[in-house]
Amino acid sequence: MTEKKAFIETGWNFDNSYARLPKSVFTPLTPPPVSSPELIILNGPLAASLGLNADALQSREGVEVLAGNRIPEGALPLAQAYAGHQFGHFTMLGDGRALLLGEQITPLGERVDIQLKGSGRTPYSRGGDGRAALGPMLREYIISEAMHALGIATTRSLAVVTTGESIYRETEQPGAILTRVAASHLRVGTFQYVAKWGTDEELRAMADYTLRRHFPEVNTDENRYLLLLQEVIKRQAELIAKWQLVGFIHGVMNTDNMALSGETIDYGPCAFMDGYDPATVFSSIDAQGRYAYANQPHIAAWNLARFAETLLPLLHDDEIQAIKLAEAAISGFSDLFRRNWLAGMRAKLGIFNEELQDESLIEDLLSMMHKNHADFTNTFRALTFEKPEDTILFGTSGFTQWYELWQARLGRQQEPKSSSHQLMRDSNPALIPRNHRVEEALEAAVKQGDYSVMERLLAALSSPYAHSPEQAEYSTLPALSSRPYRTYCGT
Ligand SMILES: Nc1ncnc2c1ncn2[C@@H]1O[C@H](COP(=O)(O)OP(=O)(O)OP(=O)(O)O)[C@@H](O)[C@H]1O
Ligand SMILES: [Mg+2]
Image (cartoon, rainbow, N blue to C red; front, side, top):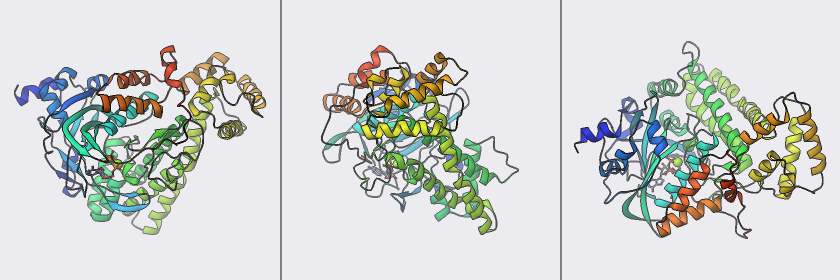
């Protein structure tokens, strides 16, 4: 098949707006080829929505593209430069093991990045091998797709291929490449890089680009860079509230892992909480609990303050005035977050309107859950289905009283009980990617080459609000273990 024919059949439709940005923010490069790529999983519905033909993607030529061995016509591969605060320390980073193939223009006219993660060394690799292991790439695939199904803004996963080459972490592992689809890969760290090492014109070019790409509705006659900051803050407030409402813990909220589009990005050490404990941390390297569940909103505000700092030269000619504008915008985050979170919590409890006491009703429930280490997901599910006896809270002190207050609260609404029930069904997932289930699927895939466990898990996770009988098996809790669940970064 000629390249041209493969291109047409697959449906690649690239534009490369990032490659037209200032030269300092990226390095064009061709990925080093891998020895014998093999497709492990392909996301058919996502491919279709991108205008891509799944059969063509599965062909030898299609897989060569997903492995970086063949560059489809129209793509201009490049690695993006960025910096970032990692655990509070500023560093130069960049795509050290990823590259952007180009931007696919979808049949609906949307522009999305097609990125290969694990595609080999780049000028930003520092000491790393530029590679990724199969387990972590499948993990990103599973959890990102689960997040999407939960209704949470996220990068998507189009495919995972193995490279046919081994990589070395603590042990020998199969190398793999994930094809990631994102609204963009503009990060807080992208702006930190330009603010630190670029010119003011480059900074302005990046800010204008971000506005055009993600916030085209912003009125450019006003202080558009302030509006950019406010819009990014708004999207993060919505995103982090959604994380909190399903018990998602990102695990490595460094500024380079915060996307300006408002999508969740980088599924390295993330995990979902089982028993409710605000101090929950899964990441093996987060000894201080910087990125613990309850800290996520504070860290988001901290990261956004770093973003605001990068914009200071654009916000106002007078630095003092610029700082005032930035501070006012950042101080709005906590209120925005709280409002999103409260709205989400009300929905989880079937509440439509607002009453002043709602906050204490919610906080009282959470504090009982914390005290009794009640499972976050299953507690809300049991309340949805009027089965409080299924929760560990049932019979504990204060619960009956709380339950009566809650029922009385529902009784004070105009909406019938059936509407509350529907709202709760739509707001409380039947299942989340439980750590033990994800591990089980990865173990079968990586150790035995059996992908059926993962495929079944993915199917169940694709409709988390269906509350279907087949999903029941995925809501069982992990066996009690003396060792807490641990996750690992950058592998
Ligand atoms: N094996 C590797 N080789 C080279 N660079 C790496 C490797 N692993 C991680 N890095 C780089 O280290 C930095 C921090 O890694 P981090 O785990 O946050 O990102 P990532 O998971 O590789 O990518 P992303 O944020 O794009 O999902 C990034 O610049 C990343 O490219
Ligand atoms: Mg990262």
